[in-house]
Length: 319
Image (tube, rainbow, N blue to C red):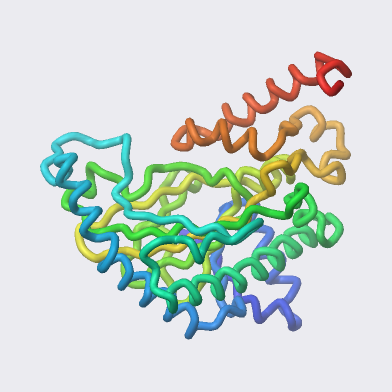
């Protein structure tokens, strides 16, 4: 049984740098996920964020979730439910413009902690993108620039709680999907597990580790690397006991960023035959919104068809 890849970032500064970079590359090629320790974000801050998020759920979200469950009669379901997720969530936006101060029902210290946490994650995301550039043989800053668009990247956070579920075999915490965006940084509960990824046809648990940050790659990195790195299907299994907290932050391209395979990665004839599409990130997201829980390949095909249609119209389309 292969071990889930855990990367100790301290080792990037010593003689084990090469081995560590190789581990990151292998994780990007074969797992689409890896877990970071010694990532530079203070454990004390993480503990504060976790405590305040769990308190906020109990105070502001739990009742609403219970009412939703009751109104849909979910405790008594007998057959598999495939059109909703057993999760309670709210969203924050950090870039290009933060809305953290406008989100209702958040205590001031919670707001402050989430903002500070986002700053650390943004820095970590950009550091990771440069490590990926190094592994791919792209110049430093290539991926950050590819995401930039006219207003910089889109960076946001989904704060989720997965309450105890009476029928975990019939209702998923979060149905299987790949992430549409760029690079995802997840702070997950270390007490209650549930996150799984699909590898070689099998669902494998992502081990909860205290103070780690789980990284996974989104569809945009698969496109830019022309498939060398893959976004991987994952899901959350609801648990019959324990409330699982998950804070996922998405470092994505700007809405008007044009995404396409990096020219340096498609020099060989073989690679040119299997080119990923070129598209505006926002167009991809519009498509994804309707088909999130379906396979990603048809999404890439649809973008390819749009690209071909635009090309065949020739210069008129741009006039």
